[in-house]
Length: 365
Image 1 (cartoon, rainbow, N blue to C red):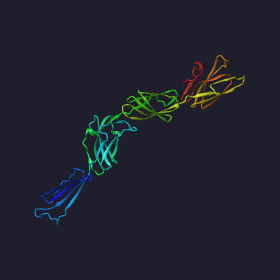
Image 2: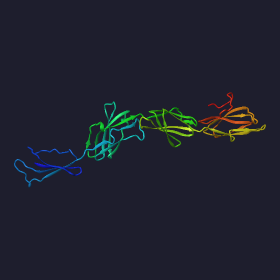
Image 3: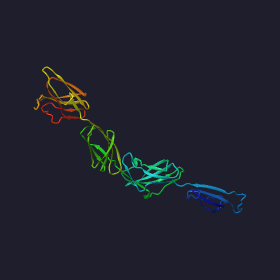
Image 4: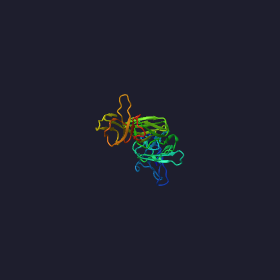
């Protein structure tokens, strides 16, 4: 038997054509199909003869068998040799490993993870990849602190063609997994007053970048050390939303919220000091108006109505409580009344230099 083998590459170009002879001592035989290159193979069986009869064109019709050989798929890292940084816990914006695949999608991809100092590698399987461009993400439970090597172990396309490349250090990528930085408040309380200091301990590799939000505005601050402090200058809500250290590009998502309350204040009959002259048998009311968060506890004094240029004398000190923002107190004694300290639910304030002796009743903090 004689046959002709023709081969056309994937672009349809004729690559070669050759004639072969086949001899067999039995009534059945086989030929080995060529699959060394992708393209179209044609096997045309031209003549047939045996020991008794020569080939007859009348009795034998040439037979042609066509065989299509598909290319094996491939998968390659876009940046072989690169080291990618990962965090030990999930964060937004984490790096991905770009891969380019060849073949007919969808693809089935298997990558091998070799952890430093661990003999047994782990396998990460990614199914039904729809496109030739793929951003590889490693499952969280397969990440270990330190450095690991990533190899492509197997790729298969929709035709069922498979490629299992040999591990090669030139074709791998590396991943370095870092502990995400953390921030811990140094005070357990969440409510603060204007003028107080907010303090946090930072862990990780200094310097740090602290991301925070105050009254809806996003801000960030560079911090060279492991202590982060801010003065509560204004009332509002202060939230640390993220922290990045210098060991990696890890941005730890945080939600550390503190509420800053305003300092309470009080007006006594429209001001802070009220001078009252009361005739014998008469009386009046002291009107207190508060700002802040109830309940309020405040201390006020009564002193003599001193003449101009002379110092008044302290007569009494009283502490009262108000559940609302207004309180009226009847008095029947003349004098100069003054509020010297006030405390609301969160914060307190005392007038500097108030003449309140320790033997008299006073507001305690």
